Image 1 (spheres, helix red, strand yellow):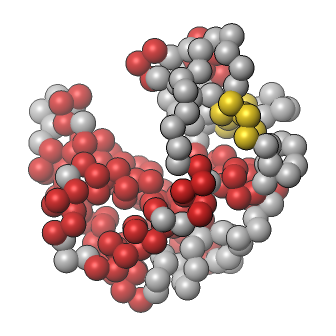
Image 2 (cartoon, rainbow, N blue to C red; image 1 turned 90 degrees about the vertical axis):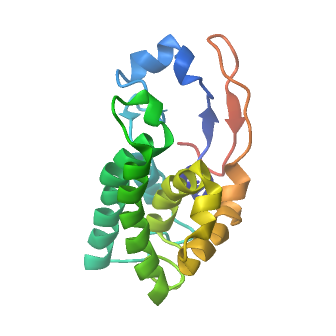
Length: 200
């Protein structure tokens, strides 16, 4: 989403993690996605790093609209989502992959973060004010995964602000524009080209 709204030109290579291309492993020994190779040869291996890179090039929607202490608070909340919440999300969604993982326990632990978000959204339409910011778009993919693991359970929660926030962001142009199916890339295939306004 950040790459798209920033207007950068980039190539997408859709991969299956159960059949990792050698090029992915060569670029990033962690061999998970996303991985971004810049024209300078630098490799970015974290979603937030890619978002920062793109938005520093161009931030037309002002996702960095919170300054100073608010920006620090945004980064703290994103870190909580990326670390503790994702830990429980993975074990809730994929309990069979983790030894002795109790999916209901991890759902309950993950729910604590959802309650935190819901409290923030009781005060404003978005996590840091009256319009979406870096925090909203960095965190919404995790909440989407959590919600879709058991949609009936999620929809039954009495978290109206959170439900409205999730629906709003999932129907927003930055999300709908990039959420489409791509063919799996194999060595030798031409990459899928998405052209923006500037090179990067």
